[in-house]
Image (tube, rainbow, N blue to C red):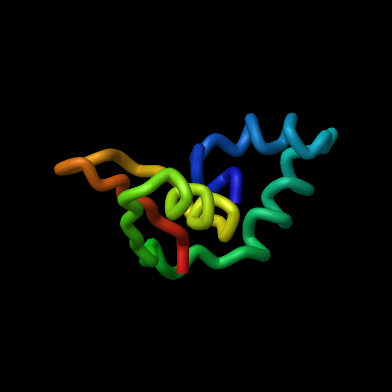
Length: 73
């Protein structure tokens, strides 16, 4: 997942503690990132926002006094 976010294989190699880049390449090829689709949700109150965050949504922005969240499908 970190490689999908950063596109930096050397960073991921260090993060995983691998000595050889070949090992890291094996791990990154095991995961297929076929979709960049997201579930979206809105929160109008702090309580709604808390529930979304606890269920894995990430905050995107606030628009027209509504907080927008997303979570990968």
